[in-house]
Image 1: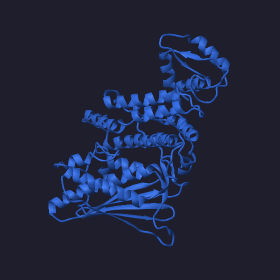
Image 2: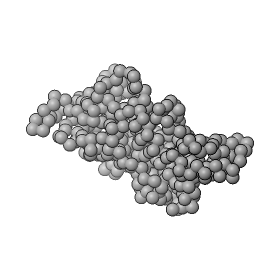
Image 3: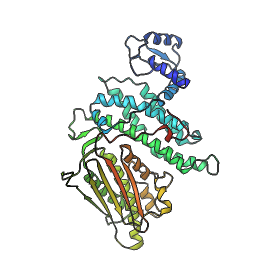
Length: 433
């Protein structure tokens, strides 16, 4: 273990930061003698009631926090199943889950940025690093009292607000970093950027889920709520209804951005295997917001291409969404007749550096609009990450000159739907394990 990680482990045990009850009250008193009060002093209270307050200067606190980042980044986050997420259905259980997991995941992303060559020359990456560092600091300096969760709830709300600009900041920053290194032998390849951003955004989906899940449960206390909802998860998620909602939203976007009075023809149909599923509608436990985001992004791309194809040929074309399921998975296909994707660029649709939008009036703006996933041309790769996050997949099959079919597969069983988390090998230039 690195020297700073060893020190962080010692400081953690001695109660300088929140965590398990401090077993070394005498050590805490000794530390307070070694670091007497100074200007800008911060006090942290040890969990053990027998410990005295430890007073640490701001400069020394920063040293401790940096060591803690290394220590926590070397810990392994838990890959949660849908069952475990559903089990965290009370405020104190959801709070403990977030309190234990968030510092590890934020610390790993801090070191991921620091492992990227040239990151300090990019203002957007410096800003994202600052945001994640503030999150980590605040979480390490808050005390979790399950009998009085208001301070923790306020902090999580603050963190969620702080994280809103991360996607556009990272997308813009990585493009700037790539452009600045063009022509250099040490420049970033597009595939390296995709791998790096996949790892970062996949982790961000997990931290966003933990914070949203906790707040949904904490805010729901004492309020009437849908019986099938547990935090961000709906036991009876209805994919047909969500696809219909996404279709309505996409039609609205088309009218606004292409200034047309005609609706894009989007139909939704369900297939049911009578031998396996006798329900009139498919239901499964899932995060409805994630499915809506994915569907809007898929439909937005298909709708834009469809409008462009109709303008070229004058022939009306349709988009068909088909939903099917067996006992283990839900499958959704989005099929358009918009001319397909050329083979030469088919692989690049998953790149954060590439956009399928044509530079025609209205189309470019339309590609930058819509969902919390989209913007800055990163909607499709982010959609695939949202599908992968809980064990699913998203693939495209294109017939140039014909159309494109998107296939979305989602796990239906609580025990099989499990978080996919980034590994150390998936992040270029850094080892977290």
